[in-house]
Image (cartoon, rainbow, N blue to C red; front, side, top):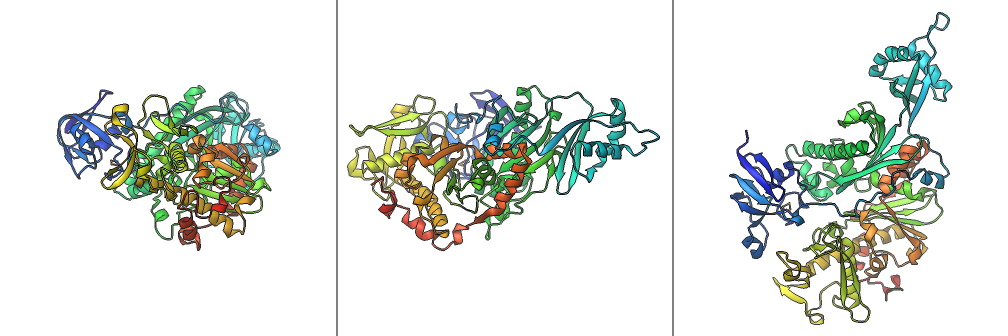
Amino acid sequence: MSDFKVKFLPAEVSIEADEGVSLLEVARRAGYVMQSECGGQGTCRRCKVKLVSGDVFLTGEPNISSAEREQNLTLACLARIVEDIIIEVPDESELTFAKDEFKPQWLPGEHPGDELHTFALKVDPLLQCLSITVPKATLQNNSSDFDRLCSTLEREGCKRPFKADISILKGLSSALREDNGFLNVQTVRIGNTTEICSLDTTEERPLYGLALDIGTTTVFGRLIDLSSGEVAAESSEYNRQIPCGGDIIHRIIYAGNEKGLNELNQLVLDTIGSIFGNLISEVDATEDQVVASVVAGNATMEHLFLGMNPKSIREDPYVPTVTEFPLLQAGDVNMPQMPHSAPMFLSPAVASYVGGDITAGLLAAGIHKSDQLTLYIDLGTNGEVVLGNREWLTACACSAGPAFEGSGVRCGMRALPGSIDAVVRDLDSGGLTYNVIGGGTPRGICGSGLIDLLAELHATEIVDARGKLQQEKDGRIRKANRKAEMVLFDKVQTGGAEDIVITDVDLDNLVRTKGAIFAGIMTLLKGVGLQASEIERVVIAGGFGRTLNIENAIRIGMLPDLPRDRFEYIGNGSLRGAGLALLSRKMWGELHQIAKMITYFELSTWPGYMDEYMAALFLPHTDAALFPSVL
Ligand code: FES
């Protein structure tokens, strides 16, 4: 029996909680996915809730304005339960799905095998599914059930030696005698051995593989028919780990707390379990029809998925526990819904900050097969950058920070309903027009909107080349706490608790972020003795890239100034790569070759990186010759 009742409005959800538990934790248990980028440290201001009745004990001074205090707002992570309480969760504190944010890359019925065709490959899944009839034992052929099974599989093209675990052997005798030797058998080749993963006697029915991309923010799952290669269903959800920290570093810190690692592991499994449920119900399949999976994610996500402590990833010399993962079974990672014996393949990582999501994305982009010098950029918290072609690949992770995901920016937010995702300047009047996701009044501004805004404010000289607001240039710029800020929308217009502003501190963060990405690109180029102009193809991956205005990204000096037709957007490269590996043993092999091909540049110690970074802290750059079309 818990101590107190907590009621959440407007959903009218009630939950019991013990004294001293944080409101953030209670909200999570009540099913809310709260914004909480700092992982409950009281610094990001994202977890605001309104006290409707009752009181809380605060473990620190909440960083909120006097106007917010007057509205009885507080930070859920600092508030502890001391009595029965009713709270209201404002829209902006809860993560909700944007209409287009998680649009499938392929629609059900479409054929991702088309991608295999572009690589001149056919569907040849990692897990082979065969329907066979094993001859009966006779006095003349009195070899064991297992030997007859192996001989039949060999006739079907499988290679010896075969191996099966004891649970398979225990069921073999009865399965063989149930339907005159008819069996559905699934095998996977591991090294020089063919492993028999499962067998059953049910009638032929579709068998599916699960491709998973475990992102720090969002987890995507795709169910793929293993015989046709069609995407049967796609589903995605916010990673339920978010309340434990918005980015990788906060998750790693959280994993160091007592029970933190188990909690993070369980939360990501819960997220995947929910996605899995959606997928199989969409195709009206049973759990045991999903017979294999390929999982891709950044190194920290892959560690947490396996329940491994990622601590060493953020400690000098920044190494993960493992980059190449052994073949697992669903039961090894406590995937509750999938058959225990279903094989699970994890995409190999390269280093702590260049993970299996990047290798999978490179596979999907086909860079390792191309003669073209290609730049691959995954725009997320770290901004991973890869440069190369079929002969060589180099990679680095830019410590860009999460500014383009809305973190560290006063009115920043993710690309959710209510966020400004595009800013356009009228060339005659100079006035700015804002596009708000979902329409209506804005609640904040997301990464693509921030890039547009920075580009336009610089073009109109409202910010200077260092990204500083020029107060004399615009009447909407004011001083607050001795720092300049520009009002984009006042609270009367939006009905919010505060004005929507962009501050000098925000702009500084944005300039640092774009500078880190461009410096990473230049470091890779110089490391191999090439010029930016020699890049023949630029592939942008990651959810943020969907709304990115390439022109503006070049104008602020984040992307190299190249002919615009060299840029392309690949979408969720990690998920696409996982799907391709699932469908093709050849692609799975190539995925490992990619990981081995990559030379990793550790930028924190790379000679010359800091010089590149300092040079990139201007709009667009200190070296104007690098941006001939901008100036
Ligand atoms: S301020 Fe509460 S989670 Fe960041």
